[in-house]
Length: 130
Image (cartoon, rainbow, N blue to C red; front, side, top):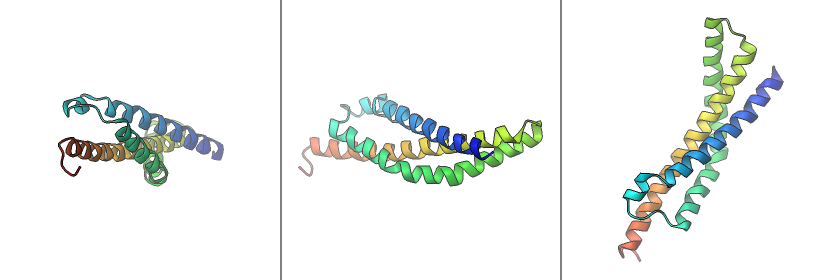
């Protein structure tokens, strides 16, 4: 059981990090960004990615505590009701909860950073605060 939980944690971390990378890339290149005028500058994109990377350890901890507990508990209830083996579902639930928390927390942090970067870039372009 311990081997499968450790594997679920590693896979959940990798999937969550991939999900974060994909979501932030789509967010930066989205129509929302293009409606705001021009796309963010290279410095602005670096700031967004830096905030996302800095948020990873905090997101991993929250994902492990909150996502792992809720994912494992949900998978345990699902295994009990369906009769499927708990030994397979509980580690999968832990990994899925971890992946979802990492992706959501880091993407939310990047969205906040992107919004702030866009506000600073817009004000700087208008001559305010320059």
